[in-house]
Length: 501
Image (spheres, rainbow, N blue to C red):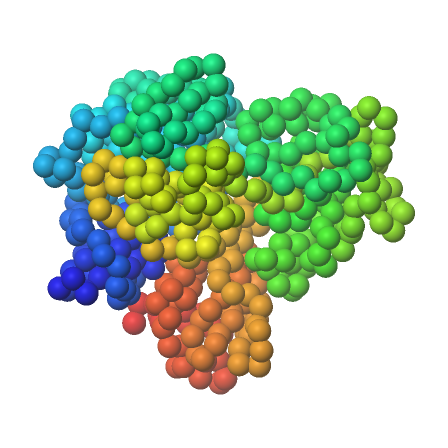
């Protein structure tokens, strides 16, 4: 029945059939995590292989044994679950294609992995603007904090690309795309023709136009080169540093610098940290934990200018206060790298607009990761980028798999404080029910509407992250849970039983 289709609420994969598939072929979710939808898709049957997914950060590990710790977020073994892989595309669909992938972050590498596995006869070229091997960008703050060394950054060793017959071009920049001739022009490296093109162009940091922002030692943290520059500046220790922006990256960066014994002040223009992911109470608790590392905060702080000579020496706030600074890091969000796509007549908005197959308005060109805009959303986070890359790689190889969205969630590294935030965290009117609980110095926040969970913050103990994600995405009625809360039973003690009932 073409009208019966099921959407995985964990990763957005769409399955066609009378019932959900036994296991999601993209993320390994069970049948109870599927919901009905009306999207056209070719069915894909799963097969089991040795792969595992971290429940904290959605990192995927390959091998018969689990890692001792997640290489991205350092989660313990028990925070992993088995992952079921997609069965190879039938030989009838396999062709000898020229597949070019521009961008070697996790979205680009995931696309290359999926394309090679399902199109063994195709020629695959992966183009990276950076000189280094493709690496875990998500781990740059852990690298700054000395939790890992440079050898642990690459996603794969150099030998992996040769073994999988993937041509890797590092230090190569895209100059132009010609969709009519199916050609990409590379700066200093001529032209390449393609049958299928996957754009994983990523994003770049947004730097507000502060007066003095062009002084030396005003920088961002986006690339391995940025991280190495920062490390070179703070080697002596004790260097006064200012981080502008109190979001996830700003907090992790400040924590990394503090662990390197730098004098760190973080400025956030809002009244509390991570205002898009946390409420005031959770933020205050997080700030208390972060302060134990030595981080100082200026909340509600507005930057007037950056002062100094050739090199930055201080940050001037609108109040007139001057914060000494020999190094200023700006973490004020990102903007998509969609300029060349726009010149190539691809549809763009905030990012490159894609459909459920992750195709642009040119059916032979796909966009994934930070640069892709799917149903008005540019995700800008690791999990969606990895899933999109896998799906686009499969589709470029001849598959028919669709992406129907993925829940937005956030977790925190480096600060030695477990954090998980998902969904809506601010009530819009009186129809919402807020519940805050503190157990053993762990903070739990639950937001309900019409007896359904719509948002959660877990601070300290995040073991309920999978359960709350399930309840939010499945829109499960929690009337019985709320009734028990009225008579004094904590919500956090009941959530796992609600998930498994």
